[in-house]
Amino acid sequence: MTFRRALHEKENDTGRYPRGKFFLIAMLCSFSWYIVPGYLFKFLSTISVLCLVFPKSVLAHQLGSGQFGLGIFSFTFDWSVIVYLGSPLVTPFFAILNILAGYVVIVYIMIPVAYWGLNLYNAKNFPIFSTDLFDGHGQSYNVSAIVNKNFEIDNVAYEAQGRINLSIMFALAYGLSFATIVATLTHVLLFNGKEIYERFRASYKGKIDIHTKLMRKYQDIPSWWFHTTLALSFALSLLLCTVLKSEIQLPWWALIFACMIALIFTLPISIIQATTNNSPGLNVITEYILGLIMPGKPIANVCFKTYGYISMAQAVSFLQDFKLGHYMKIPPRSMFVVQLVGTFIASTINVSTAWYMLNNIPFICQLELLPKNTQWTCRGDHVFYDASVIWGLVGPKRFFGPLGNYGALNWFFLGGAIGPMLVWLLHKSFPKQSWIKLINLPVLLGATAAMPPANTLNFNSWIVVGFLFNFFVFRYRKKWWQRYNYVLAAALDAGVAFMGVFIFLAFGFTNVKDLYWWGNEGEYCDLANCPTVKGIQVRGCPLIK
Ligand SMILES: *[C@@H]1O[C@H](CO)[C@@H](O)[C@H](O)[C@H]1NC(C)=O
Image (cartoon, rainbow, N blue to C red; front, top):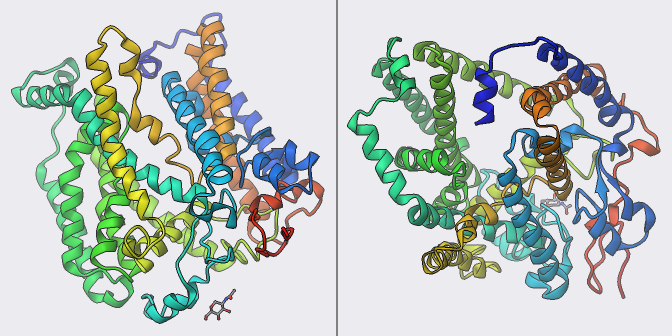
């Protein structure tokens, strides 16, 4: 609501500070400050009080680390850490509250109980919060040993090295993602089903709102624009799957299957997204399906996920952009062209940047070999890679099936299905208690869906800043908030982005020009990555006898 008002509000600057000037100044401040946590004094990105006070205690590091622990008394002065989950300034307050509730239950109750209380899945043999893959002895799993030269699984080597284990946070994250997907479907069916059905019918009855009436002025997009784009990209993909079959690993029928999934789910998912601002992450489902059909082929699994889930997610965000364009009265044809050109530019630049960085930054993404103060750790890519090993290479049968350790996590599917029904029954039995309806299980269960790769400090700082702006500033400085909040959000993000690029161009090409001093040596929470059980020896960790 406020966002739309901000778009439509008349510029009326008499006696007030102009928004354009405010934007420039805020952006300059953000730009100049970011060189400190971004390059000169990276310690300010993640300050962990507990790790500094108790440098020798594994427990203190596990509790205090914002990157590999629970993030208690951990702070940041780095805007890029705070906006990792999206800008807290533009997230509505109720959404922050929902996420806070789910986050606290998951990170400060479930994970500690599972780790220290139950030692679930031998949790103490491994770090509490890690995206690494481990063997049964708490050492990191040697994935290259179980891959043959065609990037397929080598069954003999796999049997020799044994099952892959996860940290408790990572294992529970998968369980929660199972629950979230199913809970979204049941929740939406029970609470929004009627509304969605009616909207769906109304959209065919030709009831026209004011926006649609105004948009009639413009020429509509001819369908053949869409059909040609679809045909071209499908033909290219098919070519890729047949010509580069041994690299891509994905057979043509799986490509068609992936496209069917994207086709079938785009409409329901976008309706769910539009009515609840929350959509189920089908990525795990696509990984699960192809992992069952074609185990042992990691690249095929990743490609299937890309075609089946990521293309659908892109379609939904394409529709969202069109919706914004609809409200802003942008001609649809210009919108289409801009989106298409933007896609070409973005994909070309993304691929060439990634290519360039992989070839020019020493040890990029290799955590063991990188210096400690670096930003080239590739958090997100590590999780993507883990998924290709778990679902593709090893396969769900050896992980979540009878041959794996984590079969019990499948019960999260059932829990996710039943949970919203219980809430709904409670709501129907006590209709006067209006708060029951506000329990949104998909949001609560999915609160930590971004974790991994997001860490606890990303969440803590995001929640604190979100509270500050959406609660205190909104409450006590409402005029200021209405006028400047979104401008400030954009200015802070832009400043950080520009300085990030500047740092990269000026110093970042190699690790040589990095500054080495106490304030650039990371978080000082190294022991957070240690196991806490007797007899497991890991490099850099105390041996518990
Ligand atoms: C992992 O396995 C490969 C292939 O067997 C071997 O060359 C490599 O040294 C191993 N790495 C570690 C860290 O053990």
